[in-house]
Image 1 (cartoon, rainbow, N blue to C red):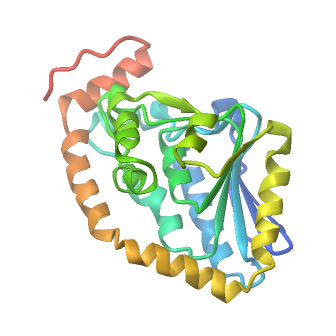
Image 2: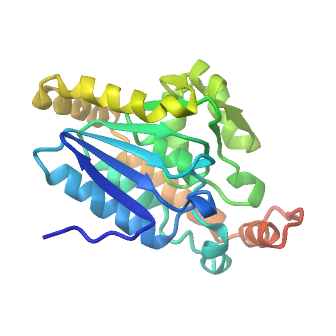
Image 3: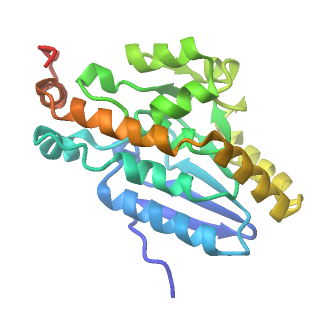
Length: 259
């Protein structure tokens, strides 16, 4: 049966390689609930297809990889003190797949976009890419695994700087601290990602998947994700969490009360 996906998330099979694309460039590839469901279905299909060995995740257009959830779309739920269960669909595709996943980061990668990338195994970034977790600026937190994965993948002080200030870093800095594997000109990005995927495909597929499974399972992150979700609920139910997104939508500086 053919897989039915929204136009905003595309899934293409190229031999042993699956190419998945956030396809909402007019909105900087910000995520809707429909896109999250489509991505989950695509990863289910990729995981179940024995002919597919490696996936590449990228964004459509030249401006953005993914800018996370569409805050305007999410605002009513956040105003009601609900994180929209966002953390689970962000993490789920990456928690259940032991085939290698490569991120081809073609531009802005912030908020949930970073969280998607943190679930991948290898990352190629365009020179124009930049990375950040700005949620604290708007009174909320990135509850899709960032507090667990980011300090595991880059030095503690750099991770804390990103999580606590909301600042962004450019592609070169991301490569320096180990957030991405390499930086290439934008026009070479997909060629580099495909070449890396093809290199992996020349190895024994069972050995590759088992190597990833051992590495991921040895981290034993599930209890940490449970902790993050429980504490995130405290933030999303606060007055500040309602003020931040409201200020974002109204294009003004938020006024926080610490409660």
